[in-house]
Length: 336
Ligand code: NAI
Image (cartoon, rainbow, N blue to C red):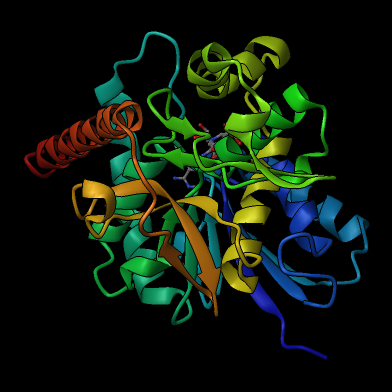
């Protein structure tokens, strides 16, 4: 049989972790014939809960699961991992300043960057899920200079899937027939869900979404707001943030990255900007990407109208500000 792949999930005792680890162990992420060794990391206060997750994984008798390493030791967690899903982080609590949350997360991601750099397998693929996802990924990239920057990404596939879902509901078509929406920018409410290049497969062939939905008010305003605020709507309804959809999207992200995107379609990923579409190089920004041979590349040459340009720049501006805030936190930490 195949050699097992080691997959790290940080924050594994949390909500998303609880939904994600069984998906990975069932082959949703890496296919039905790929043995897996799961590495689960959480922090000391969650150590017992983490042990419980490990017990349930054993009790599930997943045929693909060859081992579980459950630990609060970041070095042990990172040892030899081929894929790292970074879900662990410090959540924003009521009444907390943005800077305080940023400060907790920059110090976590700085430390985990070093652990991954020194202990993960060569060519480890990294997906940051924990918020602020783009900026956590940026810190990880900057403090793990020996990890190729193309190996560090953040999750906007959930936003991408939410956009597909809204189009599918509106047109009453299966979601699998909706393609090529784009999430630009930050995984935050400034993200820009763009339907200008999206298509739907119909019985009369492939049609632009803009042709099938003539309601510009809905497309330019309601659709965008619904996708941007979907996370908040889930919290309001569930009293908890998205977990099963976030876990599913993390599997989609890695599967697309490893196995490639189907011809003619793209997905959205937060990746290091090379200056494409005028976005400041070095920011972790969500772009449309295609994947082949285990590597993503940014889709080039899409026409950007005035409306889109403005929204793409607005979310880039927020990311530049987050970067600055993260660095001022690191400076404060360095000065004690
Ligand atoms: P949660 O609070 O249930 O779980 C987070 C876990 O991380 C906890 O078990 C906690 O103990 C652990 N943790 C904290 N610091 C850690 C550290 N230094 N190392 C390892 N583990 C650590 O939160 P939930 O709902 O599972 O969400 C996780 C993160 O994902 C949050 O930051 C959330 O905002 C983010 N998120 C991102 C989405 C995206 O699309 N990018 C979608 C949904 C959530």
